[in-house]
Length: 298
Image 1 (cartoon, rainbow, N blue to C red):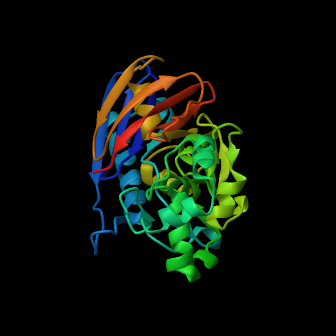
Image 2: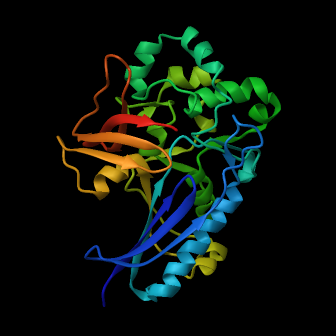
Image 3: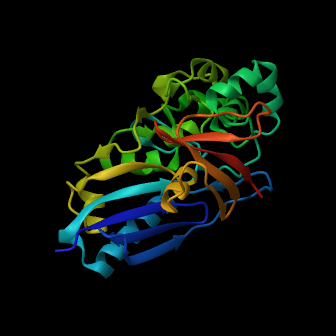
């Protein structure tokens, strides 16, 4: 019997889910779209529940199309970066998913720069200081919506929300964590100064795990809704930017160009590297594989 694996890509405009045979051949695929909610031009949010349902529906669709229930080895994730969701105890939503495209934190960027050695911070976190970073969004949220900021038990990404619904625990892969501006690329842990600047402690973030981390013991309801076994292994996965280079087989020294809702030019490297002029991001895939490049957010 041919073995299969499901890849789920949670993007900005849709979730794309594909069943692959063990030799890499696509067997079935499904895309489910959802809107960006923009009541004002600077607001770019999404409904986490809509995205959750898109993931569940798309997985169920490809499992049904491919009849791969008995041959399924696992599920793995690719996810858009820089999303921020505030949740209360137990994971109750306090905000929508604030996407990378949201610009409300823009005025707080200069405040952040004035409160720290911005150059030194960049070289530790590996990402240029920008309003899209959850680090900057947290400064905005603390000032603009203090009641939500104080009430929040955790600040998470969209993938963390979905995995918590499935497994009842908050975990974040180091690749997505690297995109928050709160992660130190040299220690592979949360950066203490960045946490202090954001006004939080590490216990208000998810537990850091490798991109290859396995979760098992899915809740019965989502397992049944997707048509998969509750004990199916789920690989936490990584960010879409880092995985784009892996997916096309880019080796160190090769450059890739990705054009989607946003665009990026990226190169792979075997160790973290930062830019003296702070123009480039440096994202972790695994401790011996990094992705370095620049993006356009239009």
